[in-house]
Image (tube, rainbow, N blue to C red; front, top):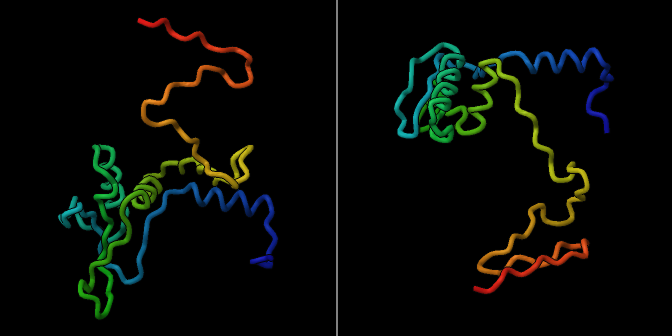
Length: 155
């Protein structure tokens, strides 16, 4: 089923990818300032009229070893009737890290393929291999080789 009447062509696809590769920031309607907070709600760095400064601060914090899940990009946007009116958490964790990398102009990380896209994997069985647990001995034979490993000498 088609979602757009316009056909994609090489030029439109190239322009789309070029736009994705440009640095970008987050903009929330009616927000007047943005800032970065730690897990305890303390501000890190300065407030800014755009999200660029807090996003770059988030990237700097992660590069210094901070866990992105403990950082939040926050803005003051009106939310009539909400208990914390004017304080809106935009993102945290890996989403915040992706936004921060984009604001810094870093190229997007390669996308991890979905299980159905992996070569030789049909999606009908678990993706992970079962690993032996406990003190089970390792296999003595290499499957399909016709070769048996010699048992270690008893001591």
